[in-house]
Image (cartoon, rainbow, N blue to C red):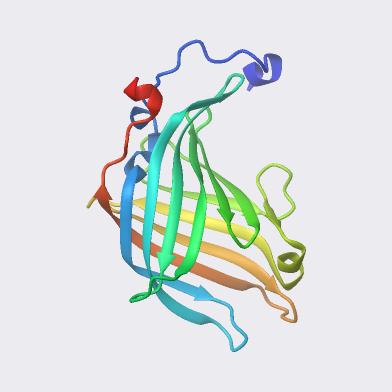
Length: 210
């Protein structure tokens, strides 16, 4: 922390360019994955609606990133979800999973094409097999930003995701997006969960290939 406060420009003197070797708790997530048993519980006019889904998520290593002395290793991801037997997109999401070894910090950035973004944060050790991240509405550092319509009608007050790296080589997540829906007095918990199986290995980042 003292280094970050006292010298905000100088980058770390030695950076290992092989991201796949330095992902810490994210190591078990690199690659291309598929999950056929996803479950989504979302709000509707008639109450909670349960929908099964099929998911494909690609997580590829990026070159190490610095903010002066701050160093991140990470994965760029794209999630594409459909309902069983359909081809129309049910959910699309892009962003980054980042690992900061110096502080044991895990970050997920979330961007969805309904004009909403979020950044969630959590703590883990390099060998952690389970970790949880949280984003909170109103935070100036790790927060949630929505369009005026979503802020009025479906206000997201918290986003939480728990990731578990399974001994079988799969990984699972459980998401809870807490929403205040206009006209309702109690928060709604929009839940998503799935277990992903690897279908292809990751491509090494450009610096590692060089």
